Length: 411
Image 1 (tube, rainbow, N blue to C red):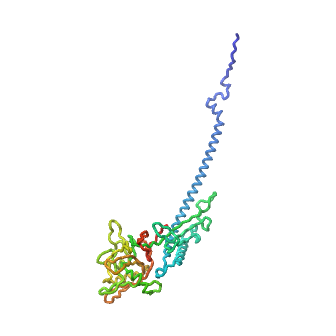
Image 2: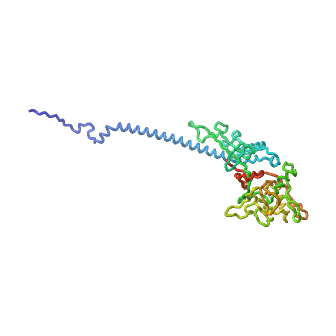
Image 3: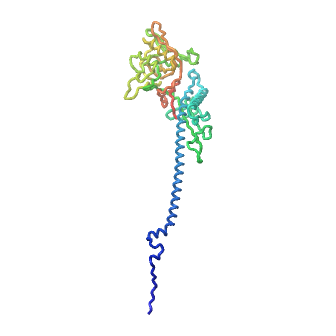
């Protein structure tokens, strides 16, 4: 039997390709072209991703910067908008009411628009050219706000409010340009602001501050004298169509008719007449009022027809009548001769029942008593806007005050 075996050929190590290389090195040589291709692809994807992130980041940065810039522009416009509304709303006060005539506010709306225009021009002179407001950018509307705590502006008479809107249109003559422009982004944006200022005249009292006095004279006027005798008297010595009233105290040592009385806002009894000349000149300060109660600061009020405020009073001219007349004449010749006077109803009593306030210009005062003291004071109606006034528009028992107002920014 003949057996057959496969032939086995011996191969020397030196005859193998890549002889002398380790297995790992031989594997690397066989697979390296594939790995390099994969790495190249990965590097390209990473580069594309980084570029994409950079583009998005740059776009977001432009958006953030432009948004912040527009917010700053909006805040600047809003501040100016508020000021324009505040300075012009007072023009809505109807002078016909001071002339005891029927209200007509057509001319007052024109005056308010003129005031807005004048202050816009003044503002344009001190701001950068890019921030100037053209007259077509401004809209002025007169209207009414019934409740300052829930302000709803309606275009209805009688007007007590002014709405001012500022617009800077992207396609206008002076647009709000973006901080960063180009790359296909818009060059400008529309910016609009609005403000509503209101004359709140539901007056119930005054609260002096630590630094600002209330311009209240410590002298009350009879309600009948002011609202009836003054118009019926038809006295207008300065020919300004505002009918005047002579407020008289009784002579110091005899009987006589009085339509006014000195009052003590500090509620001291007897009446402290020595302080009256100072209060006429300086107004009523916190120190002139009674001490605070339970930590609550004192104030003059609340005062309304259904809730009168009793104050110590005297309708007789005091020994220092000459000094009081000098103080009143100093007010009459000052830069601001306006003062607030309390109103009392009915016959004189002590304490006196104060039911409201009026604003009046002090014209002149004198001691007409001859051998005795008797004070006479000439006054005429005027509008007064003061921020120490305390109002309560939500109380239906509080009537609107024709003469005294508190200016409020309600929007």
